[in-house]
Length: 307
Ligand code: FAD
Image (cartoon, rainbow, N blue to C red; front, side):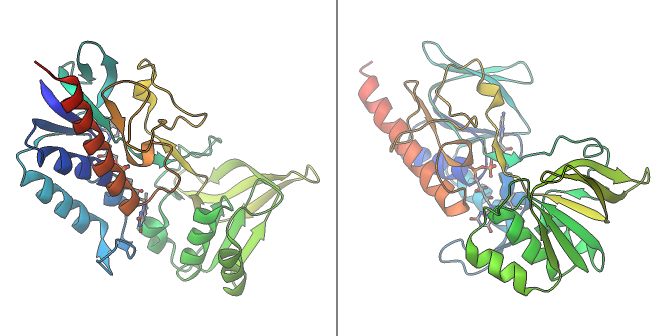
């Protein structure tokens, strides 16, 4: 068995694996895709001490750093269940089960979907979730951003520099984004903001998106917009569905509840990063949390083992 098995190979998982391995204990890391969300990111300008880097480059450095420590890296494997028995048993989709004296759950998060007709059909055919990745495809075209939180307004500002026009649709009657972002968006000149708008359908010609339908929640009127692209920016969903039988405390949003040491409600089970209740979802924050969780797990191990 492992001493620490990390589930997830994003910034949180990589940091946890390095911190655990540096204690000289048997460390493994399972990840569906090494790098996590970082692989979907283009420019990164807030990774402290590195003024500018790019996602795939940072992900490669993370992997290289983890590999320097003799961590057992198992990629392209998905954990489907975690059970606290005598040890912590991690069941993989392949059917294999791994055992560890402690685990660090660092499975991150993914963009929330709208769940309206047409969304799935037109994904990658005009429906996008990552403005950094897909923005340039809509150069000179009209797009919508759904969601008026910080990520939606940031996306609108970002896209407005590339595309012809951006319409932001917010479900509530006010934007939730910071004032400074809203002011910036209004200064761009090619961003319209519509509040009280409930998106009801992604419209297309069979091959690609050509518009969207929404209901004006104030008047009840159904409206349409002609567009080439729709960026969905309505939040992040933690990748914690595989823990539904783990009997672990999670909040309403499915985020794993952790304490200041990264401990969850189950002994020996630690968690870090975007999958947890940590308030801000960022690379440096996930890395710090990964380090904390590994140290927490190490503390647990030295207290629980007198064999
Ligand atoms: P993730 O990066 O989500 O990694 C999760 C890992 O878990 C992956 O390896 C995944 O394959 C694995 N996994 C998930 N489920 C399972 C399972 N069941 N079994 C096995 N493995 C599993 N942050 C910044 O600080 N600066 C930025 O500029 C920035 N830009 C961003 C741009 C985009 C487009 C996105 C999507 C995010 C951006 N972020 C940015 C946020 C940042 O990427 C995340 O906060 C960070 O990656 C979270 O790290 P994590 O390790 O918690 O999770």
